[in-house]
Image 1 (tube, rainbow, N blue to C red):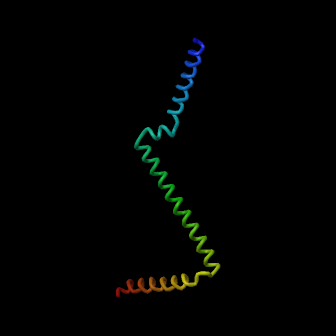
Image 2: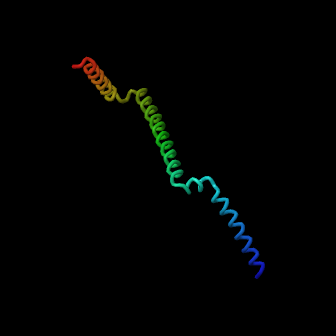
Image 3: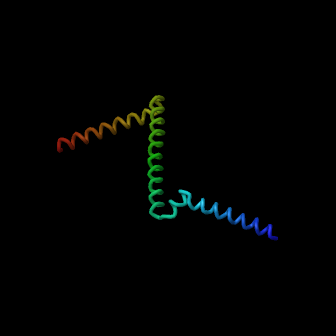
Length: 98
């Protein structure tokens, strides 16, 4: 019976050491403070947003380049020329004050 108590006592000591080590971990220290946790989540959100924008830009530019090389979408090309012409004429009209 005393051997079981010694083993149990040793296990409890080891558990305390591990629990103390876990509580001193950086992740736990960040989440102990609401301000630090909000700052961490804010930075995480900024990184996610920036990565999403950069990734989407790369994908759209690659798809646009491939479609331009295939010349499969002439309707979009004509529409884009018409749109660009409208924008240029409108900007010139605004510049001249008409």
